[in-house]
Image 1 (cartoon, rainbow over the protein chains, first blue to last red):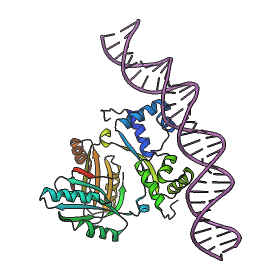
Image 2: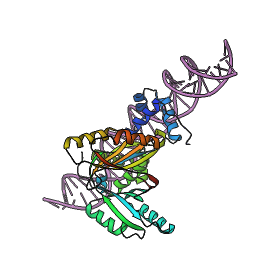
Image 3: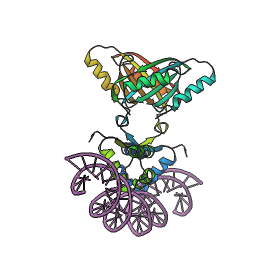
Image 4: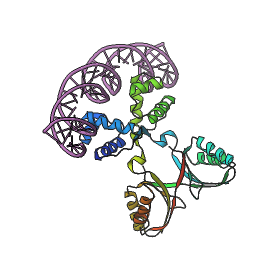
Length: 151
Length: 151
DNA sequence: CAGCAGTGCGTATCCCCATGCCCGACACTT
DNA sequence: AAGTGTCGGGCATGGGGATACGCACTGCTG
């Protein structure tokens, strides 16, 4: 697993198509990239085993899951004792509303992405779960107004 | 498409499993959620057609694609004429390094997520593509130090 | 109480797909 | 020129899976 792999043009094309439709059948994929099924399957397997393709996921509409509102949060903490910081990290990471959680260089100390149902739910989350944490010094919520491009 | 859908517990479980493995076979999925294949398939179809499941994607290791470095950028612009702003949005959205691009309430005006190969590539991107844009007033790059949780 | 809608189940079938095997083409090495 | 590694192609086949169909159950509702 995870050998150094050099991707050629065909590999890239396989990746391209599997990224658009992860349920593509091998024969259909082969057709699209201009191969016959056997070598195509060999390549896909190789990509999977080498860790280039790490998995396949269904993409779910957040609104359908009651997660229609996304908020980006900058966090600053007391840079105090290690234990408090670790607790902070573990606690925040465990919140299911937290979709992304990173420690940053410089300021802010942490970057959090949260999805909730609506503004009321966000208010609840913020006051009930984030603000109260002992390590937290400052929270800054950033609300997206319009998504121009997304991955 | 996109009818109002109420998800019951089984739907949620289907979604849960398909999110972990988007290539799950219907019979395997049925087994996991405690149904037989036919009703399971009906549910999946319904979820797809109602827009709850919006697609299936292969997940690719960014490093393997020469996208090992991710940077978050806050952007402030001159809030001047509409045309300049629109050009800014179109231009940035077209950059392939840009993975996420949102207009925000308050400050910053825009939030950009970028993936590049390494620091050198980021420097090139920043000076060659972003800094030069006429609308740009201020750029603030934020470097992740450690990813604690990710979607 | 009698429909009716929703939903799960069992079954059967048919197709298509994954996959193993072997060959041939090419490029490079010695 | 022969050897060798890499890679695509052809082919055959076994098997699994998608899916149609009809039935049963349950809970509402008029």
